[in-house]
Length: 177
Image (cartoon, rainbow, N blue to C red):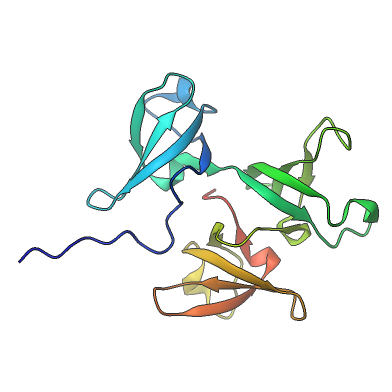
């Protein structure tokens, strides 16, 4: 009997909004907004519906930047009044190590550049592990946030089907870049 292919635990959920990026064959589509419809386990591709042209595409995670609503500003020293403010991650600039974070319009019309250490991601966000020195083999792997441990200031993340770990805010990014 054929074994049923199971969707991995660390996949982006259906209805997650994403922006297309890093497309080589259709660079004009980079920046288009899409919604995840499903995950094609056999081909390791996301099935997305492009909100611009209403077409369906099958793409690797490297071509998707998830949009993360419900993220919170956390631990800022300079603009302490922003701490606790909810906003949306609309991008990530890898070479600067900063999220593009959109705050509510009445606070700021322009997105702010915030370090991952200053953004609390919501539970169930798919993240990429970065910057681990004691377990460098985990860097680049995808995990899912289960919760945030306030006392330890660490995310509890699902790193394999059966293993969870606690990671600092700066050791996960909601981006494939």
